[in-house]
Length: 442
Image 1 (cartoon, rainbow, N blue to C red):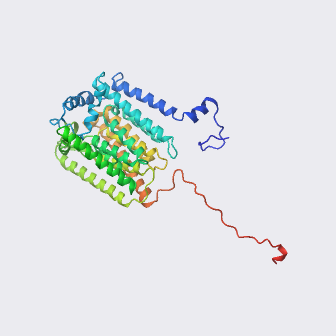
Image 2: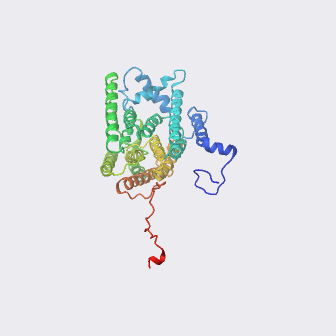
Image 3: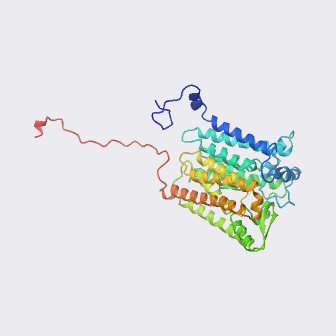
């Protein structure tokens, strides 16, 4: 007797409680680990436990709370250059007002926890359907735990919930994908690329039309009701090179050879300021343009759009954006983790290895911020290698993911499916034998 679905012939089927757990409650272990890791995250953000490094919750208790007080008056923070977000971000900042019986920061952390639970539930539900797997849920559960309390101290977990819901619904409901991608884009821009890999034809027309209509309606609504809805565009323009970005490695090394720049808090993040910084920032933006040029070329050349292509393409697009960005803040890893999780829900996705590299980069990100961020700012013998490792993992994941997407959808040379479809091959027709006795055929 064998265990159904194990692929291990000869193993006896489990009996009793173990059999019930495997057949009726296959999600017991991931749910238990999710509950354990999230309890630890909540204890950290509620400051019952002290996490090493600077306090990551200050953005919520100080910055977000300050924006909340301004937004509730009916206007965007026009005098605050740290407001660099699309207009729907106001909904995320105002959302703790739904729980007036809690302190603002505590309400925010609770809502982040609920968004995390929603994503986990979606991934577990989708993973149990035919042609799917639970690997996506495991990536999400591990990714947020590896990033540490930063996961709940930024509103990116709310955006991740919108993105995952859109991608998982997109296979059957492209209009829902388009609408949720528009909402996500007006929360934090990057979900706009969720439509990069939609199948040609009706799916693309429907999803992209829904995106444009929803985005246009939301922009008009915010512009008409709250002054300064698009002010974030000019605030983003003047940003420099943040100390954790790929381009910042140039200045981390140059500081040891007499570079005369400095590290300052600028536009809400710790950035390099000084000679050649504008040049490196411009080169980073040019590299981003080239990366999205490659993405456009892929879109034009792609021939095969499978069940996982929309998730795979979105994952690749955000990897390209993140790796080449002037800013690689720790919360950017949440974007990659949620998209990697969405990819690995599908058995046909080839993004396993890039997803594992992203998880490794997430762990190193937690080490460089907040644990040893002071070493990163000082560009010392611990901080610089940490950044080289983290950014090197992101570059490797990006190159590997791009190569995999291209081979799987353009050249068709990605190798066999992890679970190849068994096709019926008709038996070779045998020549008809004569019914005459042997003596008559001589």
